[in-house]
Length: 494
Image 1 (cartoon, rainbow, N blue to C red):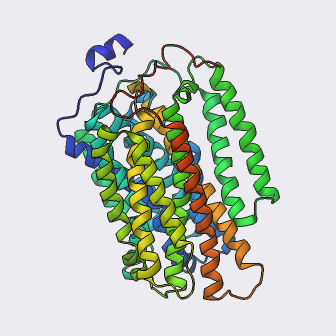
Image 2 (image 1 turned 180 degrees about the horizontal axis):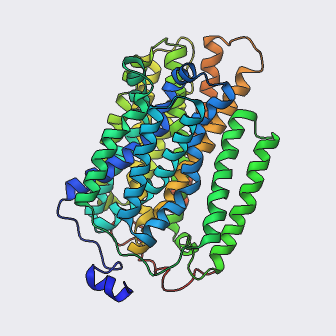
Image 3 (image 1 turned 45 degrees about the vertical axis):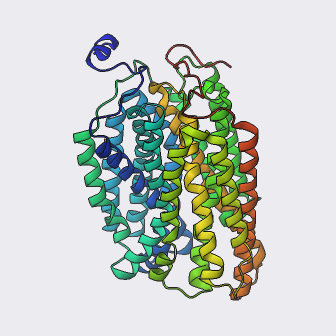
């Protein structure tokens, strides 16, 4: 079909989006997909000890239960977003969802270490196709302004709450049923997403462009090497040969990718997207904010089990205030954004985020749940939830519909890379504080070591506040960002 036929058959991609008829059901399908993707980042952490016992994992092989998901997920996000732009967002969304569900089913049925790790890799690839296209479909199905802000309020609330819900669900399923259900839970949820996508999502026009193969190869391998370097840093140290090699490969390949994009007539990632000050600031804040949130939940769940002696079920219930606060603040931000613009929300969010992390960093063996953990579990999610919505809306404001996959792919890559580096930095500080003694450290040593890691996270939150003050200017949702020229019109400038 020619480009003319496509535009006659469907609305033009450069026209403003109109809200879909079944607006609630469309949003439910997309939010459900994002729930699965983010849930699987943290749901596995509580189940890891049970998985180790069940399949007799060695400590070295066990880390690939986590890394098998994060490496392909982080490495393929940008490519996944662009594939949706080029070949149809609903099509790529459905392929990603089907692969994710099938891999989850196989993971729950796994009878060997290799089987389980392979299923985690499949989940990561499916997530890399699913997540950026879900973001794109929200952006292209809802017109810029209050309608899109409200949609991203729901989408952001689900996305932000899923990190905490993963820990909660992991504890409940592992203790009450089996570790296998941290995989099986995705099957009915994924089936609903696939059915909803077939019924309620409309296909986007394909762009008459070819995929930038060399750009795809360099950014995919480079991003995976960057994430692998962060994982290796947490495990082996920042100066180990494996870590430095991964970072070296990442630098070379990502530099090559930027050079290719600067001159390619049909780039995988238009460098023009970074010329908008608000958007660049939003991308950087996405990286910094997500650098603290995974480590925050991980450290607090460890503190609850090791120091407060909570079992997995009670640990999950203890974290329950977090997703509730994320949902509350995300909804509030979506309503305020068109009135006050992004800067006040981002400043307030980073202050709450930093205050909660700083308060949690003073934990000790004598700390209680109500006195130390609960205040942090209120402050941090309240700050984080509002920023999810605001950063997302700001990063997509003014982007041509046919480039939303590209823009959301960058946003998701910042999220994944930020989470990997932040956790690596916090774990490095934790390991340094407990020392190299083979004896099991006491509760007080562990508490202070986790507190030191959270203090680093508070410093990252302060850096995010500085980025907001220096880069964010015009209000989002009120014509803040001029609409970008499509990358279909001309190549990105060098």
